[in-house]
Length: 542
Image (cartoon, rainbow, N blue to C red; front, side, top):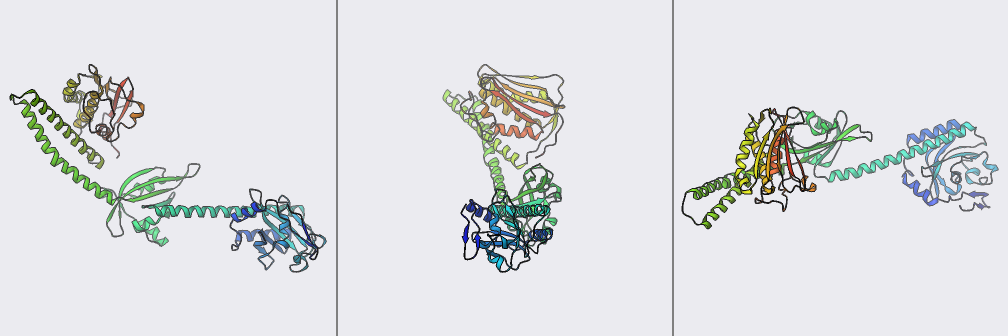
């Protein structure tokens, strides 16, 4: 702390500097309050201080490097004075205490002060320091009179309480500034996103914030009242062309606590056309978990829709231009192999290789077509009541030649009394055959691949399993088994590499039936794929 400096000519002392002056000034600047316009909350507090203490003057004074500036002034016509003449600057030295000067004319710190000897002719002063949460004294709430006086203990306590309220208002103001700064940063980030983003307030779903993408992509008007009408009158269609009720929209469902990812809808564009969008929404929650709103993104997927159309055209071309001639080639090769002609061993081997490659290409094309149908949501099921024995018999019949080549035995076990299933038999056989074919690739020669059927753990379900006694699958690989083009490396013992789509298709077919598929495996123990299917047709949510 600097020594008090006596100014003999003036007959008063300049206020000393606090030891933490630099930190104090940084703290004051952080509030961004000096030089701002009057605010009613501060005006009310100076009025209360004046009324409680019975003084004509009350100030909220903030001390800068060379001046004291008044955020609120009652009873004076000035906005600032020199720091050297400031009573309040003396109060900074002991921020824990109220500074009371009963009669400035009898106090050698202030007797010759220009604010005492000239206007406003201060005789009485009491200042309660404004102390930040970090302990920095930023200024005071002070009361002033032109005649000597004293404060009662209750008045002292009240002045201290009001000073704390001034500090509370400053803290609140700083938090609001921080929130506004964060909001500005958020809006800058949201405006940079190439999608329309809106934030709704619970529970009614009023739009409280939207980015520039909402204006440019959806044509939301800039006028606030017009915006409200725009969202209220907005019509949204499902992919099938029917109107989607407001409660179906992802943004409204999020107000009920649901997170919705990838809802495809149609909106009216600014040109009147129906714009395909991908809507994703999530609830906004308080720290206690209460939903107070939702945030939704509208992504224009017109380009993606066009790409999907082109992909569909490509798939149709593949179906017509490749599968049809390949089927003819396969038939011709089968005729050549079985026509009884005298061919040497090399010729027979070449024909066999050609037939195998034709089969592989046809399976690959069929897999690609199936995945395309699944992804487009166009896979349909022809459900019929079908006995499990019939499903197993067809699966084993189709896999017999593969098992013979692999020198692996196939068997089937069905618990007695199992009901028939309401399924598309061709699709379930396809799923089972994918699993059996996969098992045959990894089953050692001389082993058994089993098809089993038992009652499921859940009521009205049946569990179908395919079990091999192969090398097993490492735990790190199981999570990716059902991803497209996923293949285990280096473990297949018999068949050539597949497309990597079989398990993806199998999982989709099972889920389309309302079922589920799981894997149990470990190195050295073999692998079991379990399919759980409902006995009756189950509604599938896509």
